[in-house]
Image (cartoon, rainbow, N blue to C red; front, side, top):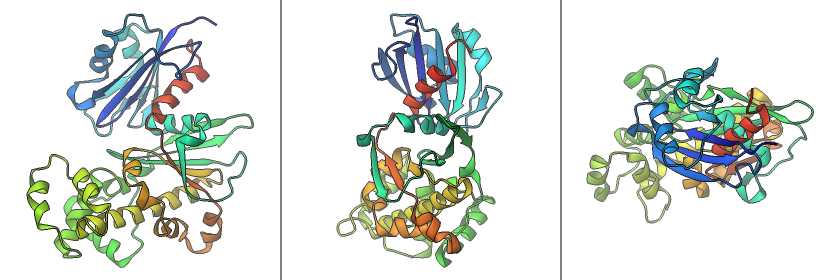
Length: 335
């Protein structure tokens, strides 16, 4: 095998991670790595160029995991004003091949390569050998994907399931749906189970008087560029934190768990459900609870089926990046 230099890139709505690695040694031994604020760049060509000018070697091919649907090696990023064309990028960046894949498909592609320390099991069960795998990742948005077994390996499949209609499971969630419909019309799971979803739930609970807000947080929330980290930080501790922030996280977890169970049913994810993205890592203590497990399995006649499916949190924040790298290696640098 030649020792060509390859790129793997995970393009998110907030940040983008890039690594360069050799074809021989793989992504486990990166030659260079950087993280960029996605919104600082007008497009993927500009961001990729900012990385390429810093490395002392020529790059042959790249795989970009992008936060949006990919059709015909083209994509419009869901939470960025970018239109990406893989063939045009090949010419602009002078690479032999550029492969675009959905970022959640990239995360799914990484799962067979993750080590035991890369995962935290929050619901035990019995994974079926070769059973389908479901992946959800609440971060800037809500990504979903799944993998199917072809008899020798898992094949990741992209999805835009995060944009499906939100289905409330309690009287309070019905009121949340009505509140959001008045504000925006169509309400998807991404509008609630994401970085922007936390402030939406918080605003609903605050206006309904469901729980008190610590007075000291009013100014902090009013001036915060992003309310989600403030809500999370003050909601994790029930005794010392903010009751309103705490209830926001509890509702967030209940909706996330219900949608994880929905995905498990839709794809028959008997191989397990995996939670990725930045938010699960920050609220891990609230996911490893009976409340999450109950909301996941509460599916009427399908409760028994859900009770057997394990749920894991992906602890490795670079999983999507690794998945993009392994996708390029598996599909071939030469196409």
